[in-house]
Image (cartoon, rainbow, N blue to C red; front, side, top):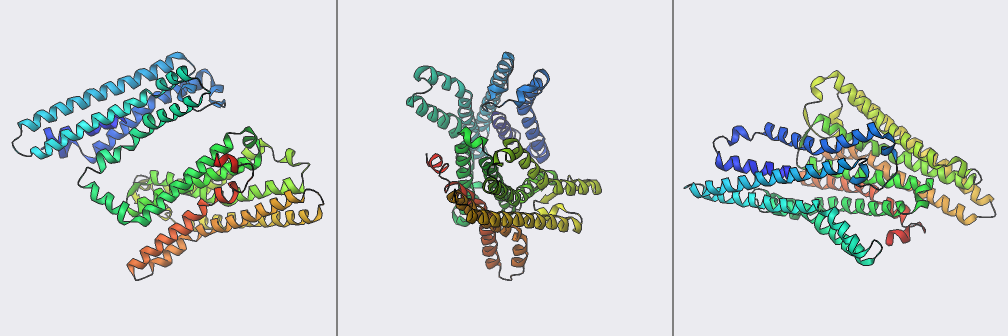
Amino acid sequence: APLTLALMSLERYVAICYPLRHCTIATQKSTGIALGIIWFISSVNIVSDIMYDLVTDPSQLLRITFCTREKLFVAKWQADKTQGFDILFFVSVSVVILFTYVAIMITAKSLSSNKESATKAHKTVLLHLIQLGLCLTSFLYATIERTLYMMTGNSSSLFIHLRYLNFLIVLILPRCLSPLIYGLRDDAVRPLFKYYFCYRMKVTFAIFMSMFFIYLNAIMVYALLSKPVFKESPRYILFINMLVNDSIQLLITSMLYIFGLSVLKLVTVACAFIVLISVATFCNAPLTLALMSLERYVAICFPLRHAEIATQKRTYIAIGVIWFIGSTNYIIDFLYAAVMDSKFVTSQILCKRERLFIQQWQAEALQGFSIFYFLLGSVVILFTYISILITARSISSNKDSASKAHKTVLLHLIQLILCLSSFFYSFVERAVATVSDNKLSIELLYLNYLFVLILPRCLSPLIYGLRDDAVRPLFIY
């Protein structure tokens, strides 16, 4: 964040103080290189710490711990080094922004023409300085939290409320102001923002619905991870995997939809990575549902062997196998394309799955694998449903548990059918492309995106989580 603010200030400095050279200095290529350097500088410190941990104490990286930066340090000097780097970044950036602000202010006073542009530029740099001050508060987050802990105690209600305010004001709020500070005051950006946010409310609704259900899934995952009994139960481990899978799918789908609306071209490597995640999560859905059905089948039909068969370790292995199966086919396709056409990797394309295939057989192979996964999931779920139904009728005790299990498997089948609808998305899209009425085709494409891609991924917390007597109280809390 601070390095990006410094770069933005330097761009305004060049634009005002060296207007004739601005086009040659601040090019698209040099901007991309500068951004790459920023990301490299920002990550090299923590990467070096992880490498040091790997060399000195490899077991450190395999321990289960609370996810904070301090937990990655095995030596005191690592924390001191990180603090030193943070201070260096903020001091350097402060100097750069102050320098550009003063330089632009001097230039604005000396210019007889284009004073309005210079005035706007030095106001922008001043906003960068304010934003830097807000970012600097994040640096004080840990110190404030320690102070609050010492003053109130860890278990007090006051500490919990003050810690929440510290999180909200110090960490969240500064990151929420960028679109207001820079975007809405820009005469070129404001009309576009107004158009997409206000006039294209249907798009806004679809994106916000995705984000809302990602938030619901996150609450559900947090609720499940807060109790050891859920973290150790294969049933809930699989449910957590499904929630994470659906959340990733919703996020990636929303990203690709926004890229498509803005006709944004990406480098093939970046697009391939995004599509890889999309394809993997798409294929994971039916396999995860099949695995959840098998777990219920073992619990009802082989109750004495359930603890032996459905262990925590085997559940994690099964999830790993699912993710591996879901991504292998696409990775092979991409490597084939990269080997056959060396320019393919660096070319810029509209980020769609079909654009990453250079041979027709690749698309057909992917389609074949998808059909196989869904057929496999359907067969497994139908088999487990019938088996549980037969078992429920034959046993005299624990009928309530068996009845709930076969209802759960039936819900898996319904969810599988909803997931199967995503498979028809591209077919519907091609059919809509033949519609002559442009306005009607746009409306149909939107409905296709909303009901075929988004809605099935939004139902997992409602179908499974809220009907579970153990999870529902935690979720509501």
